[in-house]
Structure formats: structure tokens, C-alpha cells
Amino acid sequence: MDLMIDTAQALQQNGILTTGVNVRLHNGKQKATVGLAKGGWDWWHFNIEAVNSNFSYGKLTYNPREVLTENKPIQLIIKPKNNANYADTFTIDIPRPQKVSVFFEMPAVISPGIPLKLTLHSRFSNGTEISTTAFNGSFLWNLFDVEYNGKVIKNGVLIPDSKYPFPVDFIEVKVSYKYNPDVKTEIQIPLLYNGAYHLNFDGHGGQQGRDGNDAYGQNGRDGRGGQNGGSGGSGQNGKNVTVYLKSLVSNGSTFLLVRAESLGQVEIACISVKGGRVTVSCRGGNGGNGGDGGSGACGADETKELSAGQGGNGGDGGLGGNGGNGGMVMIFGDEEALKHLHCVQIDNGGGAGGNGGDGGRSGRGGSNLNSSFLALLFGTNRGYRGNNGLQGSYGHSGNPPAIHKIDTPTLNNIMGIE
Image (cartoon, rainbow, N blue to C red; front, side, top):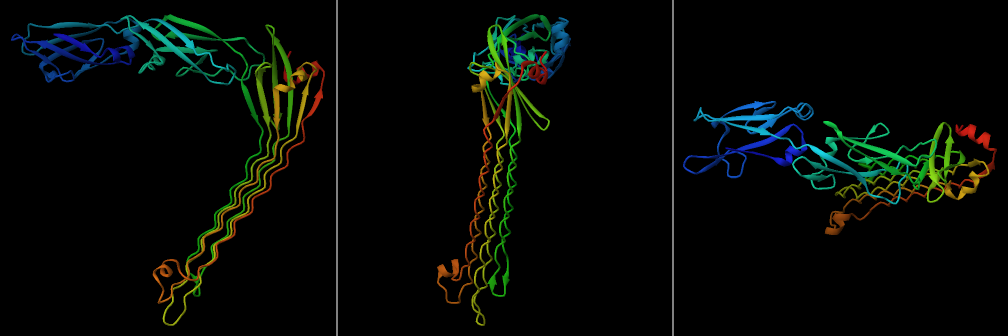
């Protein structure tokens, strides 16, 4: 007998193995169990004893931690039911990682808060080499503990801490095999602090106006008019923001620490003065769109006694809400920090006005008794379409930022720097 196992499944070490048996008969023919190519033999032809595992109808299950950490061997003892004197014992070796490497593609930006994709590559005891970038290679992330600053990295996506009080030059990533910590590696990734950050203090947009209800029925013979759409709400004003700038020097490189705050909201970013950029945004919120007018109802058809009714008018579209005004910004920094104002952009424009709602459709007029097909289809006395709502006004932009130089000890105290 020959035991067949799914080697790709064995590499994944998820506690499940699909197995099969090829049997050479005395007449030279071969039989295979269900699940293998040309397999038709059922497993009831065999008595199976599983050691350090469980077996059921071709599926072997095991505890990866017991087998791989405690080195307990998996064995299958297979006895054909029609030959009590014959038995084959198979020892199943689960391939183990012997070496692991971790890589990262050098992107244009390596900066706190910006995701960085890692790649693992491992060589197993059976000679197989697998990378997480290969087809079906992502299972490696389940075999290795990947940590950075004590935090677990999932699926190879590393997000460096975004609120360093001081710049650091490297971040260290450690990788170890879950079932043997001696199979490990580590890598240092240089932080360039060249990312672009957007610190958001914008006002909220205005609420959307409600659509008018469509009309049903008639006032007398004429169709009822559609309801007007509701007006959009005005956008909120952008927050007034105070920005503090502090320059820091580490290993000959200059960084700019930016702290922006408003009404209890605090945002921090650290950038290199060569390539990094921070935008402080306190734009006014956009006005909400006006609601659409409702459709007018159809007029009553002509009878022998009464003439056809007029179609109802569509409701007017609601007015668009006005945009909010941009916030005011004050910038504080010492003499060194203010040399790098070019790294900080202020966006305190006014919000856009909301669009006016569309006017509602007119109702079809009632049909005359002797109307043509088109007249029957469209009516002869349609109402009027509703007027479109007017667009809201743009909000006013905030004034240019006010810049103030303060002494270094005061600035350090405000920013919590000793």
C-alpha cells in the first residue's frame, strides 16, 4: 500500500490532512480509495488506527501545537479487512519551516500612519519554498507571529505609529514561527517621514432637503399639485484652529512636529522638512441639496356631462443650503520652526452651496372623449412643471493664518517636550 497525502495542505499546518491509499493487488491490478484519481474503493475495506491524530473516511485531523511543538509523530496503521495478517504503518511528517525572511518593497513614502506591505518567504523541511506573494501563499501569515513594537501585524500590513513625540530612525519588525521560536528573523525599516497628512477640522455638511410628495386625486376635476421640495440645510462653519510647530533634529535630519487643536480635538503629525507635508483643513461644510418637487396628479377624463380636468402642477424644488464659512487659523512656532512654514498648508475655504432641487413633473390633463391616441396618452391640459430650486451661496473663506513667534521654552511646554 502507498499512502497519499495532500502536500500543499500539509504545508498549511491547519490540523487537517486529506489522505488516500493506493493498493497493489495479487493479480497486479491497482485500487485507489475514494478521493484519489480513479479512486473507487470505499474506506470500509480497511481498519484504521490513528496515533496522535483522528481519522474518518479519508480525513485526518491533528492538533498542530501538540504535533509541531511537542514533536509527537502522526502515524496511520492500515489493515485490510480481508487480510488480518497484513498491516502497513505510515509515519506522516508535517513539513516545518526551517528558515524565514521578511521583506518590504521600498515605496516612495515610509511614514507614520501610512500602511506598508510586508512579504514573508520561508523554506520548509521538505525543500519547498513559499512566499506570501505566491498563489495560495498567504497561509504563511497564519504560521508566523509578526510583531512591531509589541503589536501583532495581520496579513502583512504594517502601520507605523502615527503619534511619535520624537522622530525615530527605524522601526523593528520581528518574525517567529508559532511552533518553534528558534525559527525567526527581524528587519529594520527606515522611517523617512515623507508622507502627506491631512488634519481635518472641517465643518459638517448641511442636511439634504426632503423630496416633496407626489400628488394623488383631484380638486374637483383638476389634478392636485405636487408638494414643494424641502430646503437643504446650511453647512457648518469650519473650526477655528490653533497650530503649533516645533523643529526637531535627529542624526543630522530636521523634522517638523505639527500639533493642531480646536475645542478638544487634537491632531499630531511629524514630517521631514524634505518631502513631508501637512495640510490643516478647516473648510466650511457644503450646503445640503434641496429636495425635488413632487409630481402633479392627473386631471379627470371628460365625461358626457363634465369636461376634462387640468393636470396638477409639479411642486417647486427646494432651495440649496448655503455653504459654511472657513475657520480662522493661528500658527505658533519658535524661530527655527517658522523657517519651515512651507511644509504646512492651510485650507480654510468656504463650503459650496447646495444644489437646488428639481421641479416636480406636471400632471397629465384629462382626456377628451374624441381624443387621438397621443392625446389619450399625454392628455391635452397638462399642468406646469415645478420650478427648480435656487443653488445655495458659497461660504466665505477664512482669513489668511495669523503667524506668531514664541520663545522655545514656552513652545516646548505647550507641546510637552522636555
